[in-house]
Image 1 (spheres, rainbow, N blue to C red):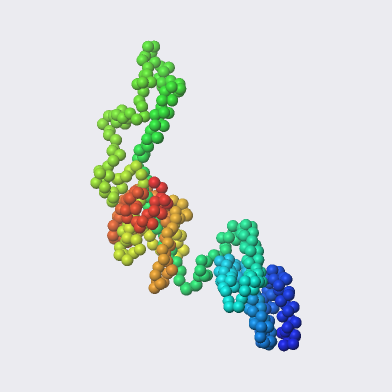
Image 2 (image 1 turned 135 degrees about the vertical axis):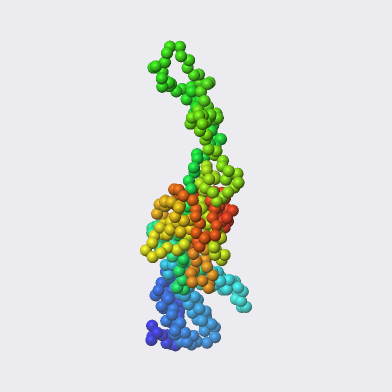
Length: 384
């Protein structure tokens, strides 16, 4: 086409092309061939604009319109990952430019330009939006997971990586049965009353009783909430240990002999004053060929000493938290993965090289030592 387009044939060519684009703009829009045609025509701009006066201005306006359509469609609509918001902004800017009043331009001329220049773009935008919607309906979950969505732009590989740490969440299980709640006690009483009315039981020595032996009445039977005599339960001279200990009264959070009705978790105080969190679970990096779970258990043992015997629970982490580093750091940030382990026996013999202090705290007491956001996450992660 570029070799055949001359000054003499430019008028016939422009008129024919104008007729085709006006009639089939919706079909041409978004086509690669249309973009190639306009690029070729733009390269012969001097030949096309070889006329003078109003005709030159009209041709120049047509070239600008066609170039706008081809560039807009090529950049925004033909790509599978086109951005709808970006396309909408381009259309909006073009619309504002078209509706702005110009000297010597009447309302009919403005309406004609709006129809000829914006309608093809809007048609393509609408059709592409429907295609994208239909594609998202049939897209498989695996494709969605593999699809990369970036809010601003794809990430730049700066050579930095994330630092991975394993943290051991060491817990001591409840020692005594928790107190029954009011509704639980009401249910126990209801079951006892129902059993007294409906159950038919024989005493163990019923067949060996002498005639006339007195039987216990239902009213004399013990109730679930009645206080028991320790001598009758375990024998004379033996006393049950209290459910509330001296360490509970003194709020001694270094002792395991407290909060016996629930779980307590080990927190240690970091020696490094510049650490992200002063109080945290025993944590550290893993060694080569070491599993993350094994690393978490190793850091617990190295921190509390060999007297503590703990066993890990499961292989998967309970959860993780992450935080970003500054630009001067060699890492983008740190991710800390939590691994649960349970105390079997033993007590803490703190390694001062790893931590300066330790505490056994309940789930509700975690918020007194951990960062508020971390505490809220951990309280949801650990059982009550």
